[in-house]
Image (cartoon, rainbow, N blue to C red; front, top):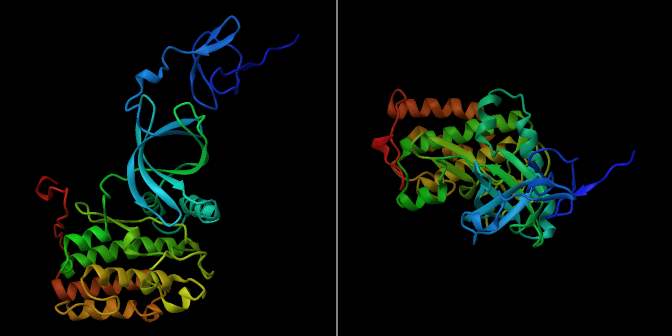
Amino acid sequence: MGYEEHQCPRCGAAVPARSAGVVHCAYCATPLVPTRDGFRVSSLFTEESLVNPDRPRFWLAGSRYRMLGRLAEGETSDVFLALRDHRLVERVIVKVLRAHEDRDLFDGEWRTLTELQKSTARGSAHFTRLLPQPVAHGEGRLGVRGDEGLRRFSVFGFASGFVHGFGDVRETYPRGVPASSAVWLWKRTLELLAFVHESGWVHGAVLPRHLLVHARDHGVRLCGWSAATALGKPLPAFPADADAFYPGATWKGGPATAATDISMSARSILWILGGDLREAPKGTPAGLARLMETCAAPDAGGFTDARRAIGELDDAAREAYGPPKFIPFAMPGWNIAAG
C-alpha cells in the first residue's frame, strides 16, 4: 500500500495525513482543512482580517509576529516592540540583526542568555526572571505570507514596567538623582551582577544604556548581552564611544572579571548622580561617596565580589539614612500614588 504526501498550499511544506478537522502547517502555521485532493487554506485565515495589516510581520519557529515600533538601536541589532500575531496575542521584544559581520555577537547573546537560564547559582529562581527571557531565535521569514525575504531575529519576553533606562533617569534628574535613590538603583544592579558572576559570566557592558529601571517597584534589569563572556576571558566587543566607563586594562584586551562589571556599575551610578565617572558630587553622604569612588577605580578598589560590595553599601546607607525604608521614585509615566 502506498501513501500520498500532501503539501501546504501556502508554503509548500509537507502536511500530516488528512484528518477530519482543521490542521496547522508545521512551518507557516496556516490553518488548513482537508479536501478530496489534499488541503486548502481555512476560511479562518484571511489577510483582510489582520489587525493593523500595514504593520511589518515576520515568521519564526512557526509563529508570526507583528512589529509595533522601534524601541532602541543596539550595538548589533535594532530592537522592536512586537506582538505574537495569533488569536491570543503576546507582547514580545524583537531584536533584528543589522549587519552580517555581527552575527557571532548576535548569536552569542542568545547563547549566553540561554545558558544563564540553566544556572543553579544562589537565587537563580528569582534572578533568571530578571534576565531577558528567550522565546525564539534564528532565520525569520519576512511578510504576512513569509515570502518577502529572510532576516535573523531574536525574540524575548516583554517585561512590564521596565520602561526607563538610566539615560531617561539622567534626563529626568539633570542635577542628579537623590543619593538615597542611587542606593537602591546600585544595590539592585549589584544583586543581579552577583548572580551573573556566580554563574560564571561577566556582562561586560554595564552601561547606562543597558540598565533598565522599574520606577514603582524599585527594580533594575540588564539588557545588551552581546559583549558577555565567561569569567576571565577578554571581551569579544566594546560598544562605541563607551571607553570612559571601562577599566583601562579591560578596554585594551585584558581579561574581564567581576571587578570589570562592579567598576562599570559604580561609574554608571556616579553618572546618574550628576557627578563625573570617578567622583561623587558634593553633598553625597561621605560613606556612600567613598564606596562609589573606590568601586569606580579601574580595579574596582579590590572588590572582586559583588556581594561584598552590597554589604558595604548597606552599611553606608544605614549610616547615612538610618534603617532601610521605601522611598518613592518618580519617573514620567508612573502614578506613584496609585501604586
